[in-house]
Amino acid sequence: MMPLGWANVGDVHVIAKITGRDEVRQHLAELGFVVGEEVSVINKLGGNVILSVKDSRIALDQAMAMRIMV
Image (cartoon, rainbow, N blue to C red; front, side, top):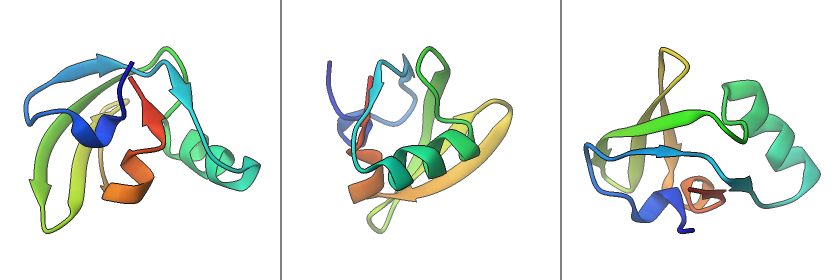
């Protein structure tokens, strides 16, 4: 298991765990980042990670991406 922030562009992973405070986990769940969901890394730009999850593209900062374990 590793943080999503370490994944390479083009990688596809399944979310294994979400870490952080309850508010952070709830916010990520509302964006579609839930355990068991496939997520792919589209690009990394200026400290942000652009991800594809549930047919949506979402940009997260590196700190938030490190809370998603794949």
